[in-house]
Length: 191
Image (cartoon, rainbow, N blue to C red):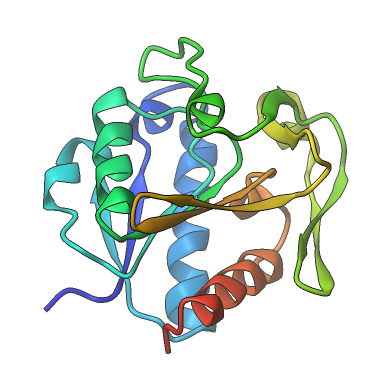
């Protein structure tokens, strides 16, 4: 039996100049879940998305880009009752062409360069502080939700999409990733 959490990796990013960022995001996602939160997870590459199954939570860590096939599979998973956490933007396809995925979901947001060191994701009554090193500021994008929020929870079919403005796994240290995952796991009653 598969664990209740899946991590989907973006090969569109992994096979690009952002490969090191994507590998870091994957490692931090796994370490935060397994080591810090003691929550087992399994990893699915985007070209193997057909093997996703029906986890209670799927995490798309700091993707920046994702194939349209993988995106549609994730949307079908959510529509059938799954929960998806996306950190940062995913408005580019596998060829790095712009696709307005947030707009297609009815989210008022736009992608912008991540050109700042400090940010925060507001969850419930507290903030998860983030700090981005210079390489992240040079290469990565973030989302700006028009309502000023940094975490959106959107229903889609029978499931939900949790979407943060920032590529949380690519911030300095692991505490912010662990704190975000703990919050989402608690919201979904994953013990």
